Image (cartoon, rainbow, N blue to C red; front, side, top):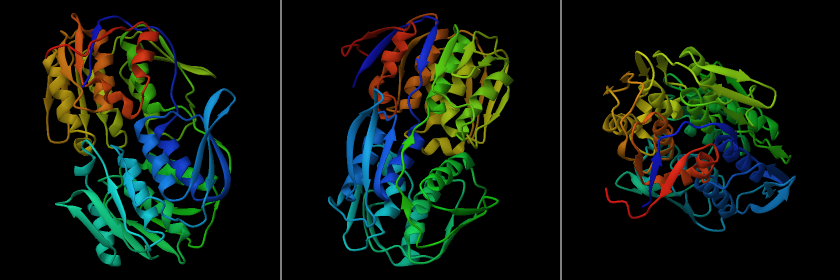
Length: 432
């Protein structure tokens, strides 16, 4: 357990935004299922991405690190048939790794595979898959509903009914596996589909690797069987989920320029640009960077149903804005690495925020200034990074407990924070 102490200071400078974690997961898996050699450029070794790399290696995929154009890249030699090399897949804390790889493990059917995890991952829901297992007579066993999960059996083509308001990750997991089955399949969405952009990312990656899926208004997805993944080279673009922290920091501090962001990206979290603008923020969009300028933000109503990962940093933005910010349709945020609605409300209120927590919403009365004090990341990377940005508006130093949580998605976040003017003391001995 690590603690850091941040002395309030407005940030200013330029950030090279790390590669999209969502796209990296998908590209690594698609390349691993393609017979032949693919080069996946622009990789950051967060814990989540390492979990997916090791998971695919467990399935017989050969993955080696190379250097291309002075950037980290992966040389991936895919397999046309999954062959289990290690029957235990440690997903660490990565929900994407867990939900994406379960259907892939069921392509082979010969060996039992056990999925494990740490942190809150063992408690994150998998009921959508359990329903499929029962319908398809696939063996599964868990520990009172939690990981570790043992599965054995072979996925069969057919109709798959999934709720759309739990997690789009179940849809993505099936989309990876179903094209390889000996027959056509259909995914039927039984409730409103949220996080459509993540499904779009999946279909775009699949298309780039030779897999075709027909989308019927996000209600049904038709998937031809007997398709083949095609090896190709792919460069991962910058991550708007991570860029959101810096764009917000620029709007409430000094100007910050974010490089490596694709303004034409399919990433849903690109919406952070429109949200900051709607709050009165000044955003400059250039060919090779997006810059957030110091702004007087005002409260607005934000629908989080399509952008759940932005909720923590949007709560920070609302807390230092004029007026009231409402973040609505955010119930799914409660089943992330922690209950993010409760966690961000609790921690910001500790340091002078004024947030009312409802079942699926946050009502935030802006204070413009926060007090500072002691907070906790709840072992959640997005809570830790959001609180770091909140320090800009604090009157006294901010101590963040469990600051190492950022390693899940953004290992060099604290280094980047200091590069743009952050003043941090790393102290393992701070008493809370």
